[in-house]
Image 1 (cartoon, chains in turn cyan, brown):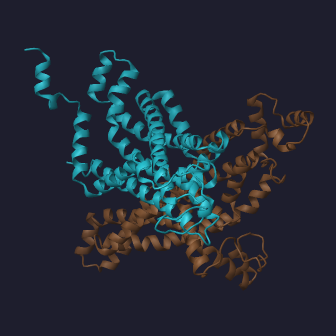
Image 2: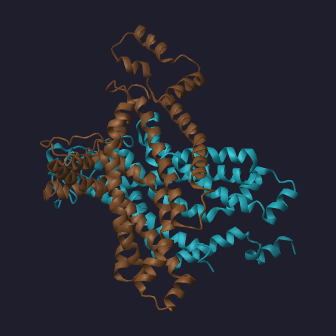
Image 3: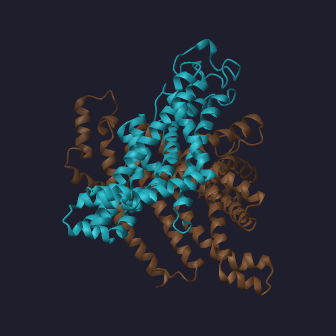
Length: 297
Length: 337
């Protein structure tokens, strides 16, 4: 019998503790109604984004001036905007931008923040405290203020706004992972790895970061909702997506000028933001309850 | 440790963070595209003039010297000249500050008045209809884009129903109250200018309600969860076993302890309140720091942006300090230190 067979037969026992923990979490999520409701909303968002060309009755950017500012009707369910573009189609295509926002911000912010936090927590010492002090400095700014300044410095565009939001999110992940890493570094398997002369990056990557997966997941879920709200706010101010991009926040900003007589311009894109943010928030809330060690097992 | 030592220690600890904030804003203002000298003298000026302006502003010096000069200027309370209106930024900020203060203060007040009773009610009537309604409202509160919510309020109560006035701090026909504080409510009360008081109060309703909504949600949930935690403790059971009326148990015994974590959350989410104020002021054309900041950012008026940012960070840090002090007052177990 080859030596690997035992490991295969007792796959679960050989599984690393964080992997077991992760699978357990997934099982709990499956049983939680609120979490599933959040997942349902987010799945809808993803489906709408993927099948946007099939779902949207009109083009999101083609201008048709004779139909401008027409109220909701059978041919344009949510009405048309100041250029005669179908609002429903724009909201549908906007789902793509929302997903781009959520994924980009959380990936960049989460990855950079987690790596910085894990490094600071594992190394401690001077390096660690320098990293954490810089994080404190970023946290000294109210989020929207720093986003605005950064986005203005980089120049108004959606990508720059996303970079700015990701940057602002970094310290949150860094703090969370840092506190986890401080306790993980004392675990026996980390000591064992160190005694076998594993390199610091290897230990951080294989032992510290995976151990922080669950709390980071909660933060990332809530962070997606927050990112969408922040990006919409920046676009509303004029520092994010630029016309004619069908970004929801920018659409609300446009609709603001026609608010008095043409309420549908601003109302529906804003409603879309609300629904998506609700989805991420209830999923995040449910995940937090599921992962709370006091309520677990 | 007494309070004075605590406060002075905290103030000293704020210095490095503040220095960091100035470094960050300084660096950011140097990344801003476009030549500040060119912006100052205007697009039509000759290269010669721009060159002279660069010399004058010290833009040719090495970066650390520029930062040092900037810091010295800052310590003198000089935030430079705004590019937009060529006025000292300090003067602009001083004029704008009272409007923002009035708005955020009133919002926070409304919030506390609603959130604490609502939080208690939802904790005591756990899983009752009230609790579920409050939960849904809280969820909507944290998920609603502030700017959209403000527009909806404007649409319904100003455009459609006409119950409340629209943008601005006071009706155009009403002269602002005489006074030195710049807080319209206080000024009009002091000068007994009832017309101005009525108008400014009516103008405050929509923006204040717009701003407090998000905060209200967070705070109600926080009061509820800390109240629930406290109500499960042994001393509450003892109080009930002693036959105290439920009212006394809740208000005299539980509430005080439940407020401690609530105060922390208020401090922590103060940043959101500032962010919300920026958007609210933009929507309601409220002449405060938030709308000033948005205008400056859109105009790339970097001295104004830097001044605003530093002031906002100062306010943010001061708010957190006040929260920490309040902690000591609320909870006798917490010593300042």
